[in-house]
Length: 111
Figure 1 (tube, helix red, strand yellow):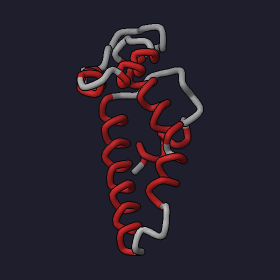
Figure 2 (cartoon, helix red, strand yellow; figure 1 turned 90 degrees about the vertical axis):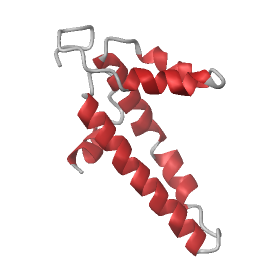
Figure 3 (cartoon, helix red, strand yellow; figure 1 turned 120 degrees about the horizontal axis):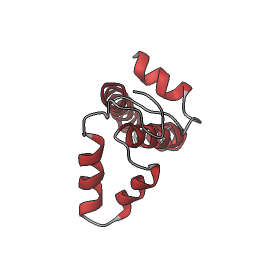
Figure 4 (cartoon, helix red, strand yellow; figure 1 turned 30 degrees about the vertical axis):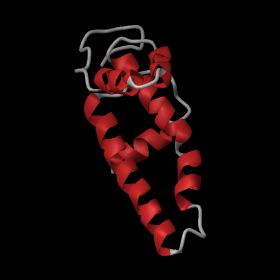
């Protein structure tokens, strides 16, 4: 849970690095919260917007975590735009985010 809250705390910090472990644990907990919101929406006969509200609120923390993760593998945060390339963009971004951390110093600092 500490990585989830850390990502929220650093949600406006687009500089720096995010380790592979910290990023993927944030994604895992984020996925569980999203599923919980969807289940709550379904249980309330789709009259609530928990999933949509959580999606909007968590957009910036998710974006900053992706940018920091890309910095950790020595890529520019602009590589995140690759997501918008139809069909292959999402898989390419997933591949980049799954890369091992660059243990050397890079533009974003030390690991």
